[in-house]
Image (cartoon, rainbow, N blue to C red; front, top):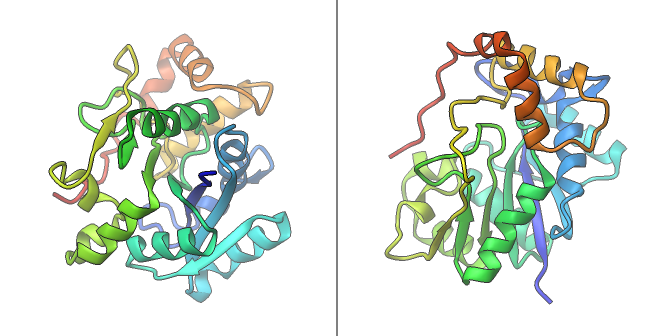
Length: 243
Protein backbone atom coordinates (compact mmCIF):
# COMPACT_ATOMS: atom_id res chain seq x y z
CA UNK A 1 0.00 0.00 0.00
CA UNK A 2 1.27 3.45 -0.91
CA UNK A 3 2.49 5.57 2.01
CA UNK A 4 1.85 9.32 1.88
CA UNK A 5 4.02 11.58 4.03
CA UNK A 6 3.47 15.31 4.43
CA UNK A 7 6.77 17.11 4.95
CA UNK A 8 6.58 20.59 6.44
CA UNK A 9 9.70 22.67 5.85
CA UNK A 10 10.49 24.96 8.77
CA UNK A 11 13.32 27.23 9.81
CA UNK A 12 13.80 30.34 11.94
CA UNK A 13 15.88 32.28 9.43
CA UNK A 14 13.12 34.17 7.62
CA UNK A 15 14.50 37.46 6.28
CA UNK A 16 11.26 39.44 6.59
CA UNK A 17 9.92 38.02 9.87
CA UNK A 18 12.66 36.12 11.72
CA UNK A 19 11.47 33.23 13.85
CA UNK A 20 7.96 33.55 12.43
CA UNK A 21 7.07 29.85 12.70
CA UNK A 22 7.54 29.99 16.48
CA UNK A 23 5.55 33.20 16.99
CA UNK A 24 2.36 32.74 19.02
CA UNK A 25 -1.00 32.40 17.32
CA UNK A 26 -3.91 31.87 19.70
CA UNK A 27 -1.50 30.74 22.40
CA UNK A 28 0.64 28.26 20.47
CA UNK A 29 3.37 28.57 17.83
CA UNK A 30 2.32 29.05 14.22
CA UNK A 31 4.09 25.80 13.37
CA UNK A 32 1.83 23.89 15.74
CA UNK A 33 -1.25 25.03 13.85
CA UNK A 34 0.32 24.01 10.54
CA UNK A 35 1.26 20.54 11.78
CA UNK A 36 -2.01 19.81 13.55
CA UNK A 37 -4.14 20.99 10.63
CA UNK A 38 -2.09 18.94 8.17
CA UNK A 39 -2.41 15.87 10.41
CA UNK A 40 -6.19 16.02 9.98
CA UNK A 41 -5.88 15.25 6.26
CA UNK A 42 -7.40 11.82 5.78
CA UNK A 43 -5.03 10.74 2.99
CA UNK A 44 -1.83 11.59 4.88
CA UNK A 45 -0.20 8.76 6.81
CA UNK A 46 2.56 10.75 8.53
CA UNK A 47 3.55 14.37 9.05
CA UNK A 48 7.24 15.25 9.33
CA UNK A 49 8.82 18.57 10.27
CA UNK A 50 11.96 19.08 8.21
CA UNK A 51 14.25 21.76 9.58
CA UNK A 52 17.94 22.53 9.19
CA UNK A 53 20.98 21.39 11.14
CA UNK A 54 21.73 24.99 12.19
CA UNK A 55 21.88 25.73 15.89
CA UNK A 56 19.36 28.52 15.27
CA UNK A 57 16.79 25.83 14.44
CA UNK A 58 17.32 23.81 17.61
CA UNK A 59 14.17 25.47 18.95
CA UNK A 60 12.13 23.98 16.10
CA UNK A 61 13.62 20.55 16.77
CA UNK A 62 12.84 20.90 20.47
CA UNK A 63 9.23 21.84 19.73
CA UNK A 64 8.89 18.83 17.45
CA UNK A 65 10.27 16.46 20.07
CA UNK A 66 8.10 17.94 22.84
CA UNK A 67 5.03 17.66 20.62
CA UNK A 68 5.78 14.10 19.50
CA UNK A 69 6.15 15.01 15.81
CA UNK A 70 8.40 13.17 13.40
CA UNK A 71 11.51 15.26 12.71
CA UNK A 72 14.22 15.47 10.09
CA UNK A 73 17.19 17.86 10.06
CA UNK A 74 19.07 18.55 6.85
CA UNK A 75 20.65 21.17 4.63
CA UNK A 76 19.83 24.83 5.13
CA UNK A 77 20.12 25.82 1.47
CA UNK A 78 19.51 22.58 -0.44
CA UNK A 79 15.84 22.12 0.33
CA UNK A 80 15.46 19.52 -2.39
CA UNK A 81 18.04 17.33 -0.66
CA UNK A 82 16.31 17.88 2.69
CA UNK A 83 13.01 16.70 1.23
CA UNK A 84 14.51 13.63 -0.41
CA UNK A 85 16.27 12.62 2.80
CA UNK A 86 13.14 13.16 4.91
CA UNK A 87 11.08 11.15 2.41
CA UNK A 88 13.52 8.25 2.42
CA UNK A 89 13.85 8.26 6.22
CA UNK A 90 10.08 8.00 6.55
CA UNK A 91 9.50 5.42 3.79
CA UNK A 92 7.36 7.79 1.72
CA UNK A 93 5.94 6.72 -1.63
CA UNK A 94 4.17 10.06 -2.02
CA UNK A 95 5.40 13.36 -0.58
CA UNK A 96 3.15 16.29 0.24
CA UNK A 97 5.03 19.57 0.49
CA UNK A 98 3.68 22.12 2.97
CA UNK A 99 5.42 25.30 4.10
CA UNK A 100 5.41 26.26 7.76
CA UNK A 101 4.08 29.78 7.19
CA UNK A 102 0.58 28.53 6.30
CA UNK A 103 -1.48 28.28 9.52
CA UNK A 104 -4.72 28.34 7.50
CA UNK A 105 -3.81 25.25 5.48
CA UNK A 106 -6.96 23.21 4.82
CA UNK A 107 -6.74 19.41 5.36
CA UNK A 108 -9.55 18.84 2.87
CA UNK A 109 -7.56 20.70 0.23
CA UNK A 110 -4.51 18.59 1.09
CA UNK A 111 -6.63 15.51 0.45
CA UNK A 112 -7.91 16.98 -2.82
CA UNK A 113 -4.38 17.44 -4.17
CA UNK A 114 -3.24 13.99 -3.02
CA UNK A 115 -6.33 12.46 -4.61
CA UNK A 116 -5.65 14.30 -7.87
CA UNK A 117 -2.12 12.89 -7.96
CA UNK A 118 -3.43 9.37 -7.51
CA UNK A 119 -6.44 9.45 -9.82
CA UNK A 120 -4.60 11.07 -12.75
CA UNK A 121 -1.47 8.93 -12.44
CA UNK A 122 0.62 12.11 -12.35
CA UNK A 123 4.12 12.56 -10.97
CA UNK A 124 3.21 15.92 -9.45
CA UNK A 125 -0.05 17.64 -8.51
CA UNK A 126 -0.51 21.09 -7.04
CA UNK A 127 -2.92 23.96 -6.51
CA UNK A 128 -0.08 26.41 -7.19
CA UNK A 129 0.41 25.75 -10.89
CA UNK A 130 -0.43 28.77 -13.03
CA UNK A 131 -2.92 30.22 -13.32
CA UNK A 132 -3.41 30.20 -9.54
CA UNK A 133 -6.94 30.19 -8.18
CA UNK A 134 -6.45 29.63 -4.44
CA UNK A 135 -5.32 32.23 -1.90
CA UNK A 136 -1.65 32.21 -0.99
CA UNK A 137 -1.29 30.31 2.25
CA UNK A 138 -3.22 27.26 1.02
CA UNK A 139 -0.35 25.95 -1.12
CA UNK A 140 -0.19 22.17 -1.46
CA UNK A 141 2.17 20.16 -3.65
CA UNK A 142 2.02 16.37 -3.90
CA UNK A 143 4.52 14.27 -5.83
CA UNK A 144 5.84 10.76 -6.04
CA UNK A 145 9.05 10.13 -4.18
CA UNK A 146 10.44 8.79 -7.46
CA UNK A 147 9.86 12.18 -9.10
CA UNK A 148 11.49 13.94 -6.17
CA UNK A 149 14.50 11.64 -6.34
CA UNK A 150 14.85 12.14 -10.08
CA UNK A 151 14.74 15.90 -9.61
CA UNK A 152 17.46 15.69 -6.97
CA UNK A 153 19.65 13.55 -9.24
CA UNK A 154 19.28 15.84 -12.26
CA UNK A 155 18.83 19.37 -10.91
CA UNK A 156 22.16 21.24 -10.92
CA UNK A 157 20.73 24.73 -10.27
CA UNK A 158 21.34 25.77 -6.62
CA UNK A 159 18.57 28.38 -6.83
CA UNK A 160 16.02 25.81 -7.93
CA UNK A 161 17.21 23.29 -5.33
CA UNK A 162 16.76 25.95 -2.64
CA UNK A 163 13.03 25.95 -3.53
CA UNK A 164 12.74 22.12 -3.77
CA UNK A 165 10.31 21.57 -6.62
CA UNK A 166 10.97 23.97 -9.58
CA UNK A 167 12.83 21.29 -11.54
CA UNK A 168 9.69 19.17 -11.55
CA UNK A 169 7.09 21.75 -12.56
CA UNK A 170 9.47 23.53 -14.97
CA UNK A 171 9.93 20.28 -16.92
CA UNK A 172 6.49 19.12 -18.04
CA UNK A 173 8.21 17.12 -20.77
CA UNK A 174 9.81 14.97 -18.07
CA UNK A 175 7.06 14.81 -15.45
CA UNK A 176 3.31 14.39 -15.66
CA UNK A 177 1.74 17.43 -13.98
CA UNK A 178 -1.79 17.88 -12.67
CA UNK A 179 -3.22 21.29 -11.79
CA UNK A 180 -5.83 21.51 -9.03
CA UNK A 181 -8.03 24.60 -9.33
CA UNK A 182 -10.89 26.24 -7.48
CA UNK A 183 -14.09 26.88 -9.46
CA UNK A 184 -13.65 30.57 -8.64
CA UNK A 185 -10.51 32.67 -8.70
CA UNK A 186 -9.49 33.78 -5.19
CA UNK A 187 -5.79 34.21 -5.92
CA UNK A 188 -5.92 37.88 -4.91
CA UNK A 189 -6.10 36.86 -1.24
CA UNK A 190 -2.91 36.46 0.81
CA UNK A 191 -3.17 34.23 3.90
CA UNK A 192 0.43 33.10 4.42
CA UNK A 193 2.66 34.62 7.12
CA UNK A 194 5.82 36.18 5.76
CA UNK A 195 5.59 39.67 7.27
CA UNK A 196 4.19 41.37 10.36
CA UNK A 197 1.27 42.58 8.24
CA UNK A 198 0.48 39.00 7.22
CA UNK A 199 0.58 37.95 10.86
CA UNK A 200 -1.80 40.76 11.79
CA UNK A 201 -4.36 39.48 9.29
CA UNK A 202 -4.06 35.84 10.33
CA UNK A 203 -4.38 36.78 13.99
CA UNK A 204 -7.59 38.67 13.21
CA UNK A 205 -8.95 35.55 11.54
CA UNK A 206 -7.99 33.29 14.44
CA UNK A 207 -9.50 35.74 16.92
CA UNK A 208 -12.89 35.25 15.27
CA UNK A 209 -13.04 31.58 14.27
CA UNK A 210 -14.36 29.48 17.12
CA UNK A 211 -12.84 26.11 16.29
CA UNK A 212 -9.59 24.70 14.95
CA UNK A 213 -11.62 22.66 12.47
CA UNK A 214 -12.46 25.47 10.08
CA UNK A 215 -11.98 25.28 6.34
CA UNK A 216 -10.69 27.75 3.80
CA UNK A 217 -14.17 28.71 2.59
CA UNK A 218 -15.10 29.76 6.12
CA UNK A 219 -12.02 31.97 6.15
CA UNK A 220 -13.01 33.40 2.78
CA UNK A 221 -16.50 34.24 4.04
CA UNK A 222 -14.99 35.88 7.12
CA UNK A 223 -12.52 37.97 5.12
CA UNK A 224 -15.22 39.05 2.66
CA UNK A 225 -17.40 40.08 5.61
CA UNK A 226 -14.59 42.37 6.80
CA UNK A 227 -13.51 44.22 3.64
CA UNK A 228 -11.25 46.51 5.66
CA UNK A 229 -9.04 43.50 6.45
CA UNK A 230 -7.98 43.38 2.80
CA UNK A 231 -5.85 46.46 3.36
CA UNK A 232 -3.87 44.92 6.23
CA UNK A 233 -1.35 43.15 3.99
CA UNK A 234 -2.36 44.43 0.56
CA UNK A 235 1.00 46.14 -0.02
CA UNK A 236 3.10 43.05 0.74
CA UNK A 237 4.93 41.81 -2.35
CA UNK A 238 5.27 38.09 -2.87
CA UNK A 239 8.85 36.87 -3.17
CA UNK A 240 9.55 35.75 -6.74
CA UNK A 241 9.85 32.08 -7.54
CA UNK A 242 13.01 31.20 -9.53
CA UNK A 243 12.53 30.81 -13.26
